[in-house]
Image (tube, rainbow, N blue to C red; front, side, top):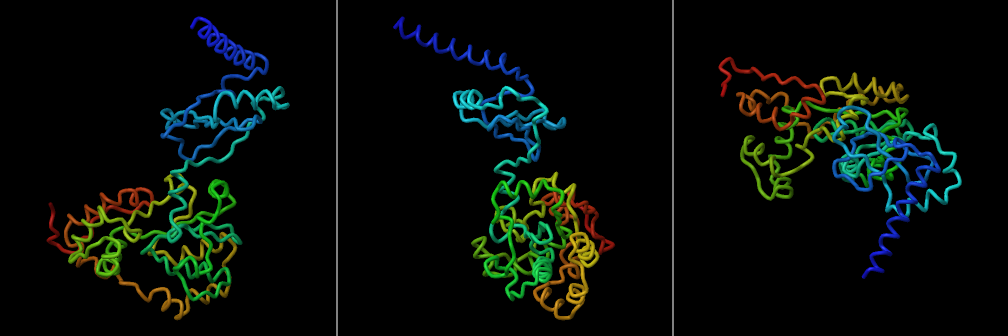
Amino acid sequence: MGRHMKNIICILASFLAIILWLKSYYSVNADSFSLILRKSENKSRGKRINCSSIDKLCIIKASNKSMDNHILEVWEENVAQLTHDVLSNPNTKNYSTSQKKDVPWLSDKDLKQIKRSSYTSPIVVTKYKLIFFWNEKSGCTYWKKLLQVIQGLKNKEVHHPDFNGLTYLITFKDNEITEMMFDDSWTKAVFVREPRERILSSYLEKGLDNFHMMNNCNRTVKSFIEFLNLGKTCKDPHWASQVRVPKYFYKNMMIGKMPDILTFTEKLLVKIGAWNESVKVWIYSKDRKKKTRYHAKKAIDKLSQYYNDTKIQDMIFERYADDYEVFNFEKKYFGFDKNLQKH
């Protein structure tokens, strides 16, 4: 027993000696060689990682006060492997903080939120370095068709990703997505719609479609309020929030809204270099209007019928608070009726 304990003490002493020797010999300061060998569920959101010239040694750097509660994280399997890497790397001796470089980093949760499913993933136009974040019931037919047109795609199918010829972000590797999202040479754009209009449009097209409701929610609805209540538990992209990537990305994203769809179209295509006469002809053609609005329900014309009091509007304000905040929609009651009921 005594011999066993003695061996353990010797091993621990040797391990400690190695750590002290590494720190002394290579003069690696606390900032460049901070090791916290555990993973955190509360990861950095969109911050960058400091990576040294030592392979696999990456340290998440807090860049503002919001990171105070985040844990620094080093991606390393174990101390033994790290020690081996340091000792066997001939460049370790010449390491200095000036050799650090910033590389983009996204957590698995962030990547999942950004990529989404194969049917709802953002559309990528590599030729023009564009990532377009579209939303159901926010002119998505128009935008998908337009993105086909600027690429010369003749596909008749618009929505099905296997047949429309469009490229989706989910088909890229995680490291490629990360680089694209943080690369300013890539234009990121999103098109959104005022939540009350959008949800009413979802109800008129999908909520009143018994087949869709049974297939997605296992039940049908008989009224708009019943549809809204069901939406709390039955998830569907047609009535999900339009905030579909970590919020900080929207600060550098082009944001378009339904009332300005044509103005935003020109602004976006000019920016990426895709604005030309053939595109203009398509946009203002009768054929385009017919094909991209064939299933429109003109929800804006029915707002007074479904939003004639404040209660239902308050439900939308609360449930889609992120949409109102991120896209700067005004939380102002529709005042259609002089006797608008309060509660």
